Each structure stands twice: as C-alpha cells, then as structure tokens.
Image (spheres, rainbow, N blue to C red):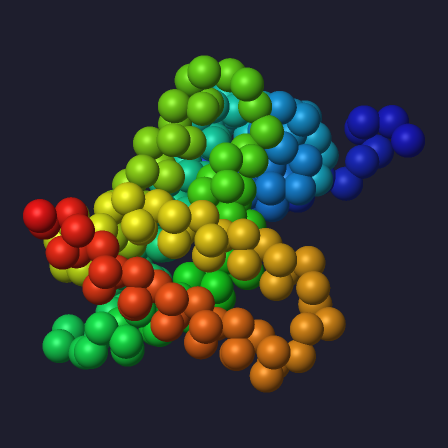
Length: 204
C-alpha cells in the first residue's frame, strides 16, 4: 500500500496529542526497550507521521523518554504517596501504599522498568535520566515508610522487591486473588518489620 493510501489519524494538535503519544511510548518502551523503540515505530503505531510526532516532542526520543519518566514519577507521587491518609497507622499507610503501587504498576509498566533498570539503553544520558527518576521515587517511598530519610537504603530494597513482585504478578495472570492477597500481606508485614528495625540502626 502506498503511503498516500494509508489512513492516518486526524490532526489533533500537540496539546491534545501528547497524552496519547505518552501512553503509546510508555507501552512501546516497556515492551521492546528504549533502544529498539524508534520514533518511526511509534509514529506507525499511532498512525501519525514522524513530523506530527516531532511537533509534540521537538527534542526527539530523549525528550519523549524524559516526559514518560516524569509522568510515571508524578503518578507514583499522586497515586501512592499523595493518597496516603494523614494520621493513619503505619500498617495502613504501608499496606495502602503497596496495594496502590501494584495497581499503578499494572497500568504503567514503564514504572517497573525504571525501578528495575530495564529501560533498554546503554546511552549514559538515558541511564542518568532513569537513575534520577528512580532515586526520586525511592526517596518518596522512604518518606512514606518513615516520614523521614532514615530508611532510604531500606526503601530502595523495598522498591526493587515491589517492582519485581509487580513484574511477576503481571506475568502470572492465572494467580488467584487469595494467593495474591497472601503475598501482599507478607510483603507489607516484612516492610513494616524491616522499617522498624532500620530506624534505630541508622540513628545510632
């Protein structure tokens, strides 16, 4: 089929198009990795031209990745940290945070790839962007755990464990609801115990 015969999506303008592009880009990068996710591949999937894609993200693929990471980070703050109920018990805060994180990770696979270091690129600039986003997410989770920076090292381990768990759950669609709930309860209990043990150790 000639290019002129292909059906293209109607022009919506950069402001309207960006969220749609970010959705598609996040899924594509999560599926094939940053290096393999070409702008042409993305444009074809959205049925738009590369010119329209660059109209939305003039800085190209790095610009697009930066926005994808920023959105994943913002969603983590809004859905996981920001949704914590003020004055709630530690158990309720951690349990709610874990459940919200797993729900978010199920909808935004790029979050898992960021935390696990699986963006799929050896580009130092891309690695730095990913590491910075990961560090900010970990610090936010540390504040959720302890309301201070005392458990930052523990938070990094917990985030890695939760990202791995989310990845495993995403792959094992046949796992029953009860089995998933048991795993989550065990993880929550371990995080709370570890956080309580870590604070005196780091304070001494």
